[in-house]
Amino acid sequence: MFPAMTNRRVRLAVVSAVGVALTGAVSGGVSGARLHAQAVTTPCPAPTSALPLTFSGPPTTAAITACDLMTRLYKFADDSMGGRKIGTSDHERATAYLAAEAKRLGLEPAGENGTYFQNLPLISRALDTTGTMVVGSTTLRAGTDYLVSTTATRAGDGAGWQLVYGGSLLDTTITMFPVPATGTVVLFRPIAPGADGSAIQKTAKGKSWVAWYNSIKNRASLSTTPALSATSVRTAVNPTATILLVNESAPLALTLTPAAAHTLFGGPLDGVAAGTPSKSFTLALRFIDTPRIDRNVIARLPGTDPKLRGQYVALGAHSDHVGTARAAVDHDSVRAAHMAARSGTEGAASRRQTTEDDEYDRIKVLTDSLHKLRPIRRDSVNNGADDGGSGSVALLEIAESFARGAAGAKPKRSVLFIWHTNTESAPTLSGSSWFLEHPTVPRDSIAAEINVDMIGRGEKTDEVGITMTDEDPRYGNPDFVEVIGSRRRSNELTPLIERANVDAKLGLKLDYAADAEGHPEGLVCRNDQASYARYGIPVAFFTTGYHADFRELTDEPQYVRYSHLERIVKLAASTSLALANVDHRLSADTPAPDPKAACKP
Image 1: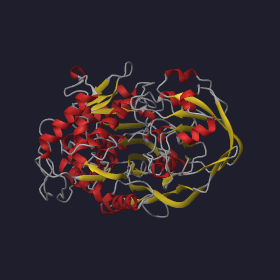
Image 2 (image 1 turned 180 degrees about the horizontal axis):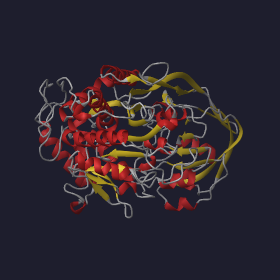
Image 3 (image 1 turned 30 degrees about the vertical axis):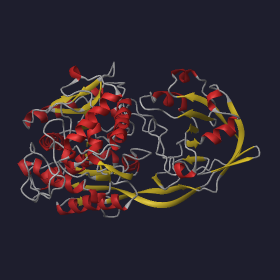
Image 4 (image 1 turned 90 degrees about the vertical axis):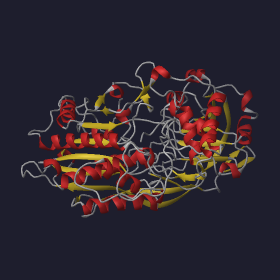
């Protein structure tokens, strides 16, 4: 969903790692556990019942229903889709499914060359281990002593490079460390669980390089070092192939072994003060690049009014996710870890304050209590049911409703359905950015954009975000939906959304807390609607926010709350229909931004 995680998400990820080591099996909440069952065929189970691991539902209908959404999501977020990572055959299969559904529903192709697709150029980049770093008379080897990754095309070869030690990111005094000139390599000890990633953002902003000290000791462990995921400088740091788009402004990221750091600084880092320069070195950097293609899926429903059909209401979601894990783990023990890590069960007032030992004990109790019920399921697929999946199937459901004229849905303006790619991988939002930079319809014909992502959860047990001031957790509820960005461009959009909620009798509680100017989570800048807002297009982003399964292999269709999802999809449909039928384009009440300027939360 979002390009960066808050500290709260880092904490959850750490507890998840503890859960992987356990051998229990948990698949649901503390009460009413959702047990894995045999694959279910028609009819749909009740949304409040225990949902199965696999499900094949009945044919979808013109009406927007929880059953339809369940049928679609179990297919789109199935293990067979392999986590839908960009540039892979798995994501190609997922986008082929979306295009086939758009065609089946009678939507017109609106991509390139009369197709439903818009191709984006990508490369599969691998570190060439013939590269070297020469420090005096010592030669360090790429893939053995250090790793380098970048999404830029420059090689970074040459002499005269130097590191400056920036200290540990656990030490808050590093924010006082003088920022070196652009081109200097700042070496940090990597961010630790629970540390504040804002320190990197402050210190590394505008730098050409960022370096990391790691405890890796040999090539075998180097080849499996996971990507660091704390900041705007987040890139993959292993020498195996990584799918990415070329981004000239991206920093190079260097990861060192202790031995390499010792060579560069003449001794262990424990004795080195922040601000100390290293020995100079010569770098011969090499990558092996293989061209690849990934794609947006774009379809059009022509408007019914000859005078208005040249204008578009865009409905957007993202189709990609993060792929598969390097190794299979016990799915249900990870789920148990997430349950134990939840801060509360009924909201902020009941937050638990626990120690790691207490959390570990709770995980063990949960896993042991259900271990007897079923065998352990090994799992390596990040299904992305809520993250990407819920929005993608929402667009299909709305498309079928509009195309078949359900409930009098006859949009006067044309409706553009866009499944963006590459919302998850660096550089994030590049699928939507590419579309806005290379639009397949006139950009100024897009009257508004409604974006949906992660709209299948948001229950009272879900920690959906943080507060504006003290950054305490916020929790969802059965009527919860966040509305982001609707008040930034046109004063007409928010009242239109609220009226759509009332007219459709949805009873949703529209939450604008995370849309506050300067909110620390910056959600207004961190999904595909931000690409449209750059060009002054009025936007609204609907989401039910974070939850413990965010970007985890436990984000599966069986945990989605389909009755809640149905209501939010109806809100997006009602809002889009109102935008398509309003007799004028929404007023522009704020100046259009510079599309090349940085997004401001």
